[in-house]
Length: 75
Image 1 (cartoon, rainbow, N blue to C red):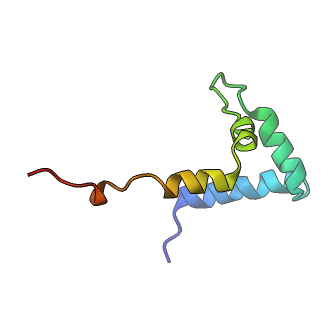
Image 2: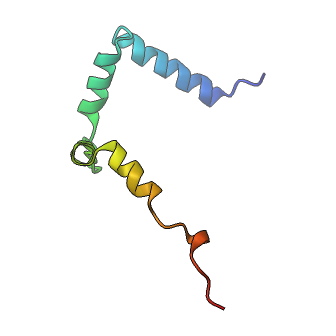
Image 3: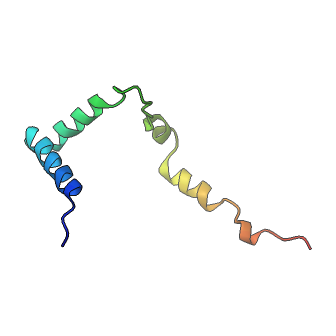
């Protein structure tokens, strides 16, 4: 199998990054979250949306949306 040098380098950096946190996912996530927005890009916080609308309400509204195929067509 062909080993792409870019993929190999990416995997090497990923391994080094994870090792620097002792492979502790909580520490890795905390580090990534602390880096968000530092470069001036907008970070979207979806927690307010998720808390205000229950997941089954989203499913219900999506299921009840009219289907364009079932709409009557005029001649």
